[in-house]
Image 1 (tube, rainbow, N blue to C red):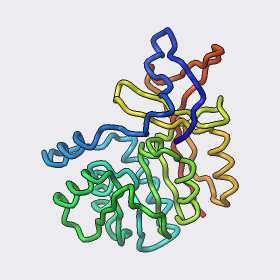
Image 2 (cartoon, rainbow, N blue to C red):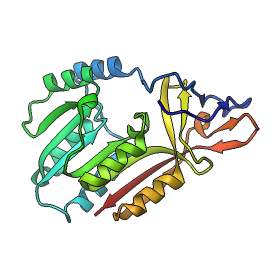
Image 3 (cartoon, rainbow, N blue to C red):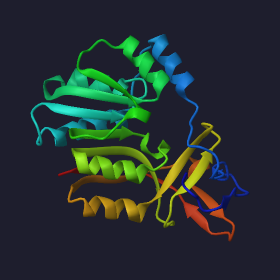
Length: 237
C-alpha cells in the first residue's frame, strides 16, 4: 500500500476532499452501480468533451496502424468501446475491456460483438497493443504511475483522461472523496511529465481541466495548500 503524506481536511468550502488513512485500500464501491446501469440497458450519452477526446485518440492512432488492438482499462459500462466500434469500426480489430470482476460478468452478458473481449482488472497483465486508454480510471489504481510505465512499454499510443496530479508533491497522496465515496491516488505531476519524456513517446496532447470546488486542494499539517489537478494526455511512439 502506498504510504501517503499526512494531509488534513481544510476548514473552508474546498475541504470536502481529505487524505485517506494509509490502511484504507484503494476501493471505489461502484461495482453495484455499474452492474445496475448495465442491466438497465438505458441509453447513455457520453459528454461532448469525452467524445471529442475519443476522436482525437483515433486520429492519432490511425497513423500508427490499420487494424488496432485496444485496451480500455477501467471500461465502465462499455460506452467508450461502443462509440469507437460505431464510428471507427474499420480501424478496430479488437477491444479488451478491463474492469472489476462483477462488472466484467455483466458486460459479457450485455455485449455480443466478437471484437469486444473482457478481463478482470486483478488478472490483467500488460502485453503489446496498439492503444492503451484509461478514461478517468487510472487514479483509482493503487500505483497508477507503475501501470502507466507498463503501458508505455507495451503500447504504441497511450491516452489517459482525468488523471489526478499535483505540482506541489514529490510522493503520491491517497485521498478520500466523500462526494463519490471513493479513494484516489494523487500522483506528482513532475514524475508524470518525466516519465512521459523519458519513455521516448511524443506528447501529442497534454491538457489540464477544471476541478470541482470540493476537490481543488487539500492542506497538510503545516498549513501548506496542495493544489489538485486533472490532466488528460495522448502519447505516441
